[in-house]
Length: 377
Length: 102
Image (cartoon, rainbow over all chains, first blue to last red; front, side):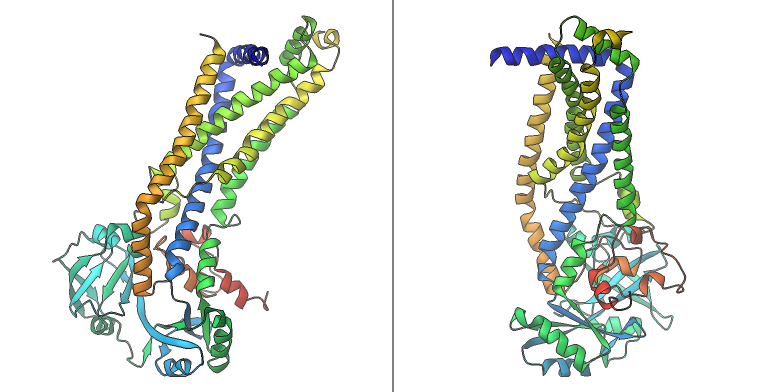
């Protein structure tokens, strides 16, 4: 065993010396390789963590949302629909939801206004998310002005700012009383934004959904499962930016692999010839090339993974921020919870280290099996 | 010192850091569990349906509530112009509704 380890160390010594002879080329290769792994691992960590957290947070989302559609667009739903739905067997409760969007011309941001079911927001007051507090510099006791549907200015006092820990769901949220919501949007009191349902037996959800669509054909039903699936597919690999990043990484790997697999340079062939002439076996040459591939790819892989972890979980995905922000003025500041597991690291290892190492060995094996005399000439 | 020693020490340090990464992730998850619970509670209390990831357009703010028209709200021929629309995939429920038309 000791002899075997010593042999490996000797070959690593030789390989490192050989790599250091072409310092510039190999250091730049290491940097580019690390960057590719960094991008791939960052996407993988970020997407997996967001998906996992979404599934945990949204497990308590409404079991079923019923919305009215007119000409393919979401419209307010009449309160009379509530009674029709309540009469369906298996429906435990039906709740109304009042919510909408408000564009704030002062900062150019969109807010989500919502009337909480439990009346803990008195008229004339609002509770705001941290994102709004940040862009409007509004804190408890301050007032915010809203322009109503008829052009009047409504002044509301900030009663409370929602906790920073809830920013992932509440950054742009304004909790408002029903009276103020009506004044702001001039809502017809006979209708609400949409309805949410609770059913006695979750296994009956699809049956109840079918019954609703039969009784109220102008509605659409969104099940909790569909909400969860939305976030499971949110950063789908077919999404625009995702495919750009993945294709970029894939192309970089193809270039690396092609460079290696297309054959060795004259200098490298000569080196192999000399090694064979001084007594190296073919297996020794292949072992040296194996270590060459491993030194470059394993170092890049480990550095890339560690940098990706720091990037996503310590800097809040700083490099992705411009893309994620888009044109949004109000951007939630949240740190992704690290849902990282060994399977992600292993799959990344097989995606990056193995192909490169194989691509390094194959041409060397071909060169090493040729007569040293002809290789050196 | 031999060159292989430098490499092997570097490899060992990186491997230890990799293991520490998992340890950090574990403790961070434990520490964040109560905040995840808080967010989940807010979702239940207010009947929320979506995460606040993108606020620039209504159909990316409430991804699960989007309808077929929302990305083309300016005109039926208008292309997607919000950056977040090119990152987020459309909700699967839309594809279900549109299944027969595709």
